[in-house]
Length: 149
Image (tube, rainbow, N blue to C red):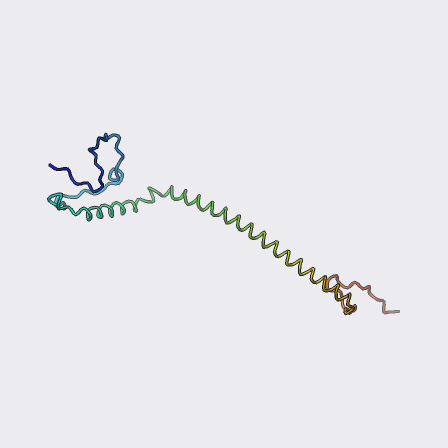
């Protein structure tokens, strides 16, 4: 009797002791066995590509249904780690951005105030100022005049 064709290319007859063998996927995930009426009469009649696709679809379907049990905890731990790192990076970037924005706003406010002071001093030097108006920067600096007497 001939040895069945193995599409994966591995051969258990290469001197590997069964106790030392690495478990196969079928050892971990239960695969349905095919009933004799489903099987072709000879190995040469087997459509290995179709059989491989059928087994792959079956295994993927079972794994996807069990993925939460198999991978859920690991995925949650990995996702938590990734989200924690991302949150830390975003927080650091926001701090830098807000710090720069604050510096820019303060610099702009200082520049505007310096411009106002400069313009007021220039206006006073040119004599164009009307002293009856209150000083826009420092309030009315002229003393109240007593008009009663």
